[in-house]
Amino acid sequence: MTMVYNYGIIISVEEIAISEFKAKCLALLERVRQTKKPLRITRFGKPVAEIMPPSPDAGHDDWIGSMKNSMEILGDIVSPVIDDKDIEALRD
Image 1 (cartoon, helix red, strand yellow):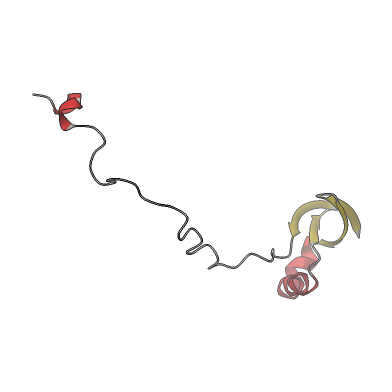
Image 2 (cartoon, rainbow, N blue to C red; image 1 turned 60 degrees about the horizontal axis):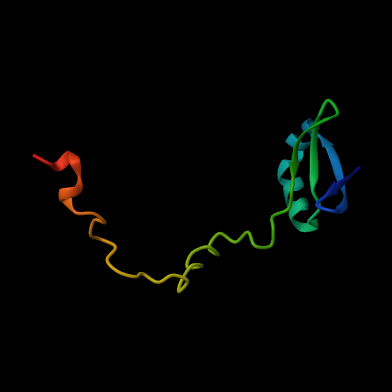
């Protein structure tokens, strides 16, 4: 168990050896999801990864339509902004 200062909050992080994580991966991931407590994976006592619980707003469809009614199109957005005559590459 290690205490970590994270964004102004002190949290306890359980450490587990990589070999044990490999053997119990799915159960450990489920435990992190249920308890909302992070897990640190170590190899030879040195951290190699941290498993964090998902954030509450991690819904995959939340972004679809999130900008609806937040913009207004003014003018023509299809026509070129300059005349063809002003483009040097198109001149004879």
